[in-house]
Length: 448
Image 1 (cartoon, rainbow, N blue to C red):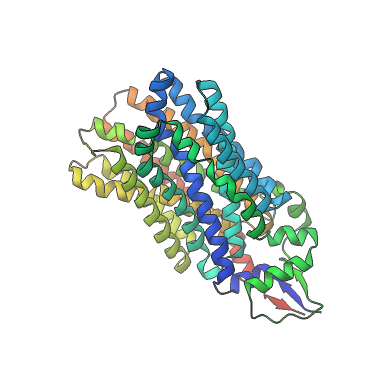
Image 2: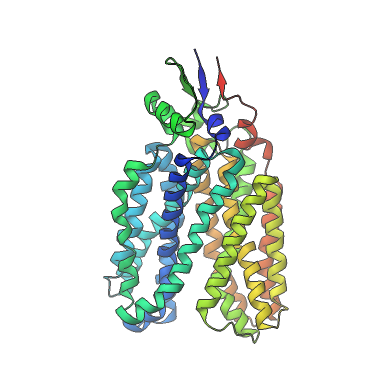
């Protein structure tokens, strides 16, 4: 009887139409996801004026989605490993599309915040699921590049907001940018019809016929016997399959899981500290970036270049070493911002900061997806993303408190840079021998 290890087979496959379909959906979904998260930032001044609210209330309204993303990443990511990924992706798209659009119908801070919180569940939930989906089916030699390319879509969504938000708000009101976000709900039937089910989920369900169909799409030229049996990795324990959360701490992964969480917290701390306070800190230093539109574009283009470039390096080199290097570069670039006086040079530094902070965080998602076995991948990335949001929540508050102390400007940047050094140290302590890619590389695809 012929036995096929579906994970090893996928890793040894050649990029084809099947992979392009998954890449297309994952990138498109994260473009939409990035738009939905960034849309409040573009509309907030108009919302404040229309609703007559102060900056404190506006901050709560803007942050309401953040709590939703934290809970969504943890619980919906974990649920995807139990009910199937296409179904969970469709649920997340429905949540962030419909409830972002619903926010445009509100007229008071409370109902707006509730709508954004529910939308945040979908925004945060879909991130670990598409990471797991792209990582599971990707050829091993392209895996990190493809996952980081998916996450580059997140930054494209932010750029779309910057390019279209101002025009839409001025011509049709702030509600228009939220109504546009509701359009992707029409994609849900197509997602359910064309997105393949996770092989780990099909293995757990014993759905061998569907696995055969997927394997033949992954490797169209592979000849299979009629009595072939599809299997996963022999290292996957029943406990990990039945309880994905326990799987994060079994088989020697416990300490590394905590270190990955620490790395995510510091990475998201840097990203959200910059999102909240970078423009203000640079204004305090006497620099002018011109329009906020240009800053958003430069920062996000840097993030895209950093993510794709980091993904390419990670496939060529060791992803762990690349991620450590990116954290360190982020710390150095942030430090350099404190001493940059030329506006022209500041654009260059902001580009590097985008590549080495937001870009680093996108590589961290790929790294977490590479570390955890397929059956618990969405859970692993989801918990890392969710716990990491603690750093995102702390960042604006801590930097705001430091600004209120009127400390020398350089010290504010140093605090953000310190997070990058802590992130590099955390990744250093991850036991790479427990990574899924390390285990799968030792296994044959076919056996009898």
